[in-house]
Length: 557
Image (cartoon, rainbow, N blue to C red):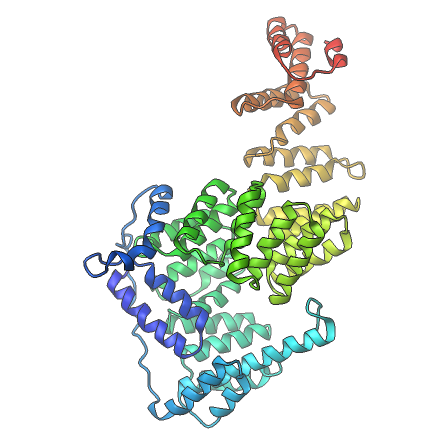
């Protein structure tokens, strides 16, 4: 990787250029990475480095080996020259247009720059027109269908922008920022192949615009597409690949990339949040919780990604911690979609599902493409037994992101509630294709195969086997495998799975009906096959069992 000082200088210049072009989210991202580079203690006071201290403890705890900033063998990074600002003659008009833009007066900003020919001015004029069109499209959607309704409203500026930017691209007069905007226009018009080509050209020419990388990532829907991209080997490519791997659910590869980036960006809160996301997908909730707690200590007014932290607290039923987090984000910025989702999760954990839906709908009014809110609102409608509303919410989620396995799983659950196992099976298959290592999805498929309408027990057995191999944390698969084999008259296989289930319960120090069921079956099975000593061991364990045991079962022994 490039030296820390080189990365620092590149990012400082990029922040100024991105801010100057009103690409504020990209400038914010670059600034966070700049501060994430470890500072030289000789040059900075303890107060200046306080922002960086927190993340180091996370890094020490979860990194298995030290990764330095030296690139791996055979890897070298290209040096992309930082763009020089020009257009002195346009600067007065540009400053006026930028002030209008910052006040969200987009058409006014575009009008001021109508006669300016500098590349920076052309970009801001086109960008202002694009946002003016988006703003009008949103207004039309609300007027026609309401804030959460579907609508055929379109950005009316796309045609003229495509014509102008296409001509500039063919003439070679468009700069990397113009290419970024051209890519967005092409993507909105459905021309994804050309959009990918244009985004690649943009990031190769100017790699510090994270917005362009993010748009490119959204067009990489498979690993084959990702591998086909002809990207320069700049250090920003590592950020992109780590994020793209995560989107493609290649979480271990993503974690490897982020750990490598930490060699230079040791204190990046962004990287820590992305590591937490990957571990959340791998259901390593304990590690995720520790990372988010450290992030909040380090950056107490952070709202970004905190909705995922609330999901972890919800799954662990940490009521007081979720209550504290909801209060915290409410006081920080209650009109952020993330804040509304966190508060919605809080009310859901309290069992107040109607109030939870209110907050999820509020999140969607703030951002109708906020994926988590659609999915979580679907879950709430399932709890309320409002199946049609749940299906609608899940469908809106998969329209936004067809790779969201939770929404497909939710659709399967909804159709299962409606006693339509074939439909449910279709959606469960989609979810398990996207998340093949989640035992819950395999169990859901198996239960569909077990229904009276299908009664495909062999297929159910295959699904339960996959669930058992995926670290079935709910301890359902082994018991069900034993029951199904017994029902099919395969007592040897049933005994094998009952033994495995018993071993697991012993290792986890669990007791309950499953333990009684396993002991009774194994005692009966051993007695029937003349293995009386083994049967006696199981019977003795039953006598030592302190919980309730059915008298009928004991009588059968």
